Length: 385
Image 1: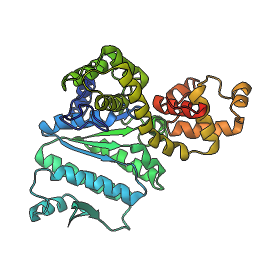
Image 2: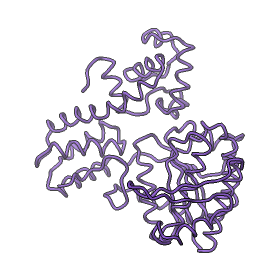
Image 3: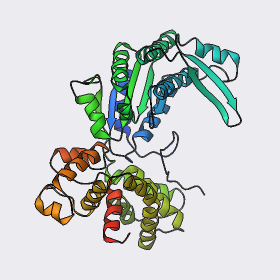
């Protein structure tokens, strides 16, 4: 029997826990051709939520397109990702991708870019070619104008989803890309853009800094945790649908252990379901926690290894000792930190959302990810539980 809990983004059609108010609010934004900047910590279910909404919009004849912009390394990769996202969306339902009329239809979209299709043993690859001397602003303009002509002809609306959008700030031409995108979304009446990211500090700065192109261009949408009772009932019901009994107390402990992070709830419940026969016990939960933490350790080790030595020391310090006074002599001395090094480390960790940027703005400093904090605390004291 298939495990009823999902590891990774939930695909359209798979069991989805509530989020009905959020889905309806976001749908209205698309109907009104509004733009939205959505932010929350990792593992909160942003991508799953958007994909569920896209399925509903597809059924309403809205053109939908999604792309993850992590990693985007230069202007060429950004243009490729944006153009391919648009061509795939507008090409839905035309004909089979290898049919000549499919490519003809796509080529008619643009004036400066030329879509190409390559058939390989692994499948069909879609890419675009263009004169590299053309400025990035003109290329973005070509993509949006082509999409607008298509939507006007077909009398349809469109949703473009830019996941991990903050990654474009790393590019040499980021200012030109931001400015050109802002100009295009301002003049497109059929297109709604959703900008999503897990590095909240950087993403929020893009949309709240009055000196940045995207200032006040989009509605802010904060995705909060699913209420405890709703997610607890979801765990119980999904187990029951496969003939397994999960006591409410166990389901509540699952939610509390990961502090309601939707992705982690699914992953821990997935491990519990695999271990249990018919009845899920406290012993099952204990063993599942150990297995779950071992699984997540691989990801956390990679994050930790990418930090400087001072950042690593600060992460371990906050894992066991979250504080409102991180620059006090007592805290610094206790954890072997210096004031100057700690200030630089905090800025870096907040930008990467490893330290909670929203709490930091209020003077409270702690790690964003509660499971990463548990991993850090366990490594700090030498035991993983």
